[in-house]
Amino acid sequence: MTAIDETPHCEIRASLWISGFDCDPDDISAHLDLQPSSVVRRGWRFLPFRDRTNLSGTNVWEFRTELDLPDPLPRCIEMGDLLRPLRTALESRIDRLTTMPPCSSRVSVEVLPRREPPEFSFAAGDLDFLDRVGLPFGIDIQTPDLKHAA
Image (cartoon, rainbow, N blue to C red):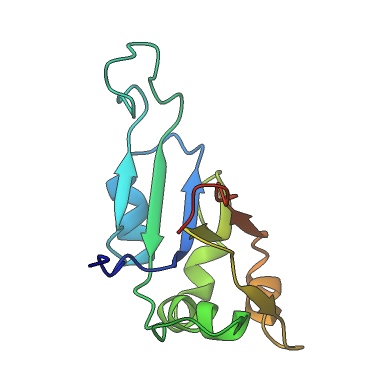
């Protein structure tokens, strides 16, 4: 009998990343009136912890949205669907985003496929919010090792 693979074919995350700021990450949370999903403080160790050289050189603040994706994923995913929860959370905070302390901010979609990654489509207005706020946007698709994929 063959075991059923219940592992999702792909994990997708949409996040606002803020890094390179000198203030405490709690100050970023207070400024945006938003609790982060994770923070890294300058000097903290990061994976792999056994390597003592892996110390963060900067503060990092991340807000990741929960995505309600269909299972199984369609072959093509609309970028607007991925960005909608993030846009909803940030829309009322545009003035706060544009008055951040000196830092580097970006919106990132990370795709971690376990098999062939999906395709993405963009509608005309998908990135207009990011343009209004002045945030760069990136998609990071980790390449799966398809030789060993089921």
